[in-house]
Length: 351
Image (cartoon, rainbow, N blue to C red; front, side, top):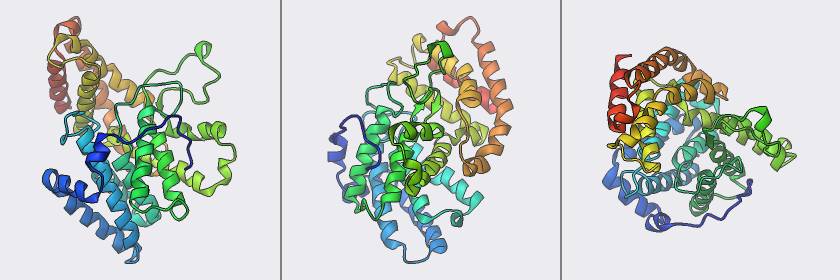
């Protein structure tokens, strides 16, 4: 494998509960039968563009995709007992169906190789597989991402991917998932910057992968598969963060989901006043910082697909953030997070 993982991330109870395609299909048939119809439509698009001799590739990728989607839905989604409002099966599908679908409509399937589209699809299914690893900012690749890479490698091996034949795709997935690491902390001022850190903090790792690889794996630029993997990591990052370039109502809805997940992970009940202040901050100044400072498109494909709508969203986002600050000025500690989230949704609909 291309990246060396710092920790062992063995299989867990969910991997054992959903060990193979048959188990995944049972869950999908019961919980999300619409996935079957979506996959059939998308595969027909691939066949129309790339011909009829792609069936082995489609079969391997679809099996891996079904396993990744199902395991996330069982581990952190609607089909298990550790529900995450944002990182769940719906996030997979909003990328796989909605955002990749938009990109296909914008730039055309023929603009990239089939393996590239397969890699982006598998990224959608697998990049958030693990969400409960210990937070550690001492290394650019997050522990959640590292654990997701480890499980993805096991899925690929199980589905018949070969390290030699499929090197380009497998290397790309390593880099794409690593690049989805998102550090929300502010960039430290020069006086506090640790020169031992090879990648500055703040935002997604994907735009800084070249710096990271220069430090970790000198000579990677002479490897065409690695170079393409970094390019695909840029596209994947744009797909992962493309809520900024969706209709404003969807941008606000995704912010609300992430806010609710953040409170859950912080141990603050949304119905309690203790969650009011952090929710106001996240859904006002926090959204402005994400939109204008932390987010950046890092691929031509992402900018072409989502850039125009992001520009259109800038004004409404500023207005809603200011409305939130004025609405809760002086009483952030007197309201519940639930009231804050509901107010945010109402304000967003007005813009």
